[in-house]
Amino acid sequence: MIEYKKARLKDIASMQILVRPEIENGVILPRSDDEIATNIRSYTLAFDDDRLIGYSALHIHAANLAEVRSLIVDGSYRGKGVGSGLVNALLAQARELEIAQVFTLTYRSEFFKNLGFEEISKEKLPAQKIWADCIKCKHFPVCNEIALIHNL
Image 1 (tube, rainbow, N blue to C red):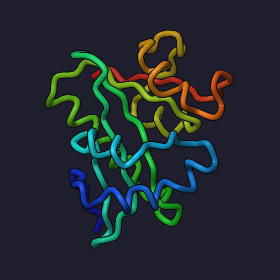
Image 2: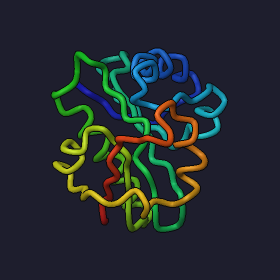
Image 3: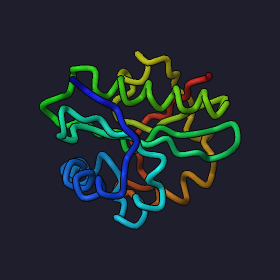
């Protein structure tokens, strides 16, 4: 049975192991242990028994805007609803915080569209997103990610 839990500091090492292949492929931005620790409360993890099988973070940009980022699911669990469960958990958190909109940047736009996100122009994203995160990407400034937003 899949369980969704808030991350704990002791989960960081397992999180880094799970995400490593996606970082190497340039799909997800690298984050240091310290950066994850600083933002640990934003992460929700998916477990099958005690095995970490996925995670994502709800990063708040402003009082009315947050981002789903760092969505990763173990390859053997993809297509089984784990990613959807993680995103839905983050959307529920955003609703509790009364955040009006949640956006994401992704190479898998259809996945997010199936969860109620709509495609938008990247120019509509906050400038601090581009200069804080995107500039670290090996694909910057030529980015093929698609921006999507979900209105809550």
